[in-house]
Amino acid sequence: MKIRKIQKKGYDNGVSLAKAWLSEDLVLYPGSGREELGYLLSNKESSKKLGYAAASQGPNVNLLERWEKHAIEQGNKKVLERIRAWDEKRFLDCLETIHKKSLTEALDKNKYPEIQGLAAYKDEEVKGIAAVFGIDYRRVLLCNCSFLRFMYQLVTEEWEKESFEGGKCTTVIFKESPVGPIIGRNLDAEMAAMAGLQGSGEPVLFQYPEEMGYSYTSMTAVNSKGLMIQGSSIQYPNERMPKHRFGVDGYDLVLRFCETVDDALELIGRYNLFFEPAPSNLAVVDVNGDAAIIEKTKNTFAVRKTDRRSIFTTSGVAVEKKTRKIQGDNTQTYQFEFKRHQLIENLLLEEEKTPTIEAVQRIMSNHTMPSPVCRHLENLPLYSQLVTLYSFILIPREQVYYFSVIRPGSVYPCEQEPKKYSYWFT
Ligand SMILES: [Zn+2]
Image (cartoon, rainbow, N blue to C red):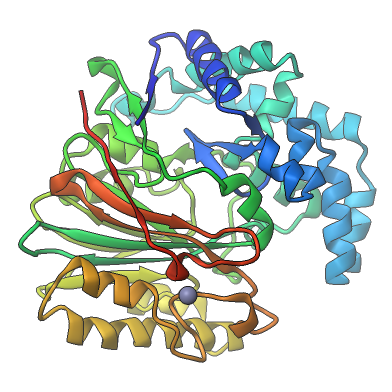
């Protein structure tokens, strides 16, 4: 287990994080891959070995060029024109202005006590990281999920669309079993993210000083009270997103300040307009076996709880009346994702009678067509090409999980013996 001891001062924390990443051959990289505290990281050596040149360029990669290339591939002329209207200097200057503006934003102390002073702390943290890597602090900002998404939307003026890097994931929960709650989780993303994920799996613990909240682990996203949160990406193309609204790292807040599912629901409701990532299908479960799915749009959300022994969510589809209406259910994509939703529902009806680790494993590696749970490239339609990159099964009460990650040559997680990891909170 790797421990990141969180420092009380932002700058010190940035220095300490960056030194840890350096020693583990991790480099900041503004693409999908692994993530710590909102910073996107990639494994430099394995990126090089696998021939992913962009990832081995680290934070200095020219994002405008990359987005331009993507727009060409997509044949999106309107977006291409918008990207070409920018140059790197203007791009970075604009990012700086937005960052400074976000620092001065004063949010009601009584309503949002958890984030008072957080923007200034994060600003210092970014500068500490930049100092260790010897790079422009704005390049560190671009490796932060929220800033990256925001800048992409600003440049392309695609406010209604998620950044093209969004993952497609599935979370399945048995609320009760002889070992307490059992959670199955598949991360589905672009094949290109495989390089950055090689060597991942070992728990990373963010150890917070008591006054800053509870400690938690990365990836498995479970805190010292046994509360877990996971998300699946979804789009609401018809919902207007208010421009220039800056979000807070919602997972971080839930994990640091909540003990139960009801605590999490209260916090998500209170931070509704600022909660990131959004939109998202969130799954929360606590150590007592309470669980909920929150279908979060940009502006509102619907909550699902159930008396059944299991609950789940998957990407791309809202099923609650309120959110389904906002999403619109007559598109090809909706129907494709909805089929996976129905598939999992049926699998759970059967498997929840005997809730075991093996049962979760069977569901997470199910390949029923046309919209399988475990996604292999050759089985996917052209409009949904994200594959299952890693899969884990978490048992919070025992503080263990079973993890497998895709290997080069496309050896999918379902084709491997998972590795068992333990974590503990000191
Ligand atoms: Zn598979």
